[in-house]
Image (cartoon, rainbow, N blue to C red; front, side):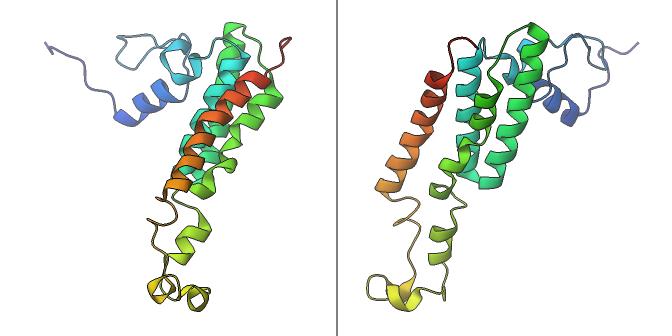
Length: 173
């Protein structure tokens, strides 16, 4: 006599549809089968697009936090590898692994960059030396992380690294 099935808890739905491809299995409500193409791991159609996607996600996540970039990149690379195997798509795994950790090239220009965060705190170890250029030796993040040069370099790397991974893919992989 119920009009609709009991709602499924949100966490398993998020994991199943974003990270973990569930080929051929159905949700607990029995309404829908999730295919490998329903998640980001099913998006790449070949080794070049797989490497570029992993690099782009790893770099984007690393700008938020260096540890997040490392974990997200590695997990996405693993899931793309599993998904590609299930679909019979060949990948270049050494490049996929390198792409997973490419976020380490941009993390210091992001929110967890240790030098910009350190010099933005009062009483840091370089405060006396920087007191001539900045009041109290405290360098605001608007001059470091949000400065135009940092934004240009970090933004360029976030675009160029995935392109580099794309074009580095061997033709025979």
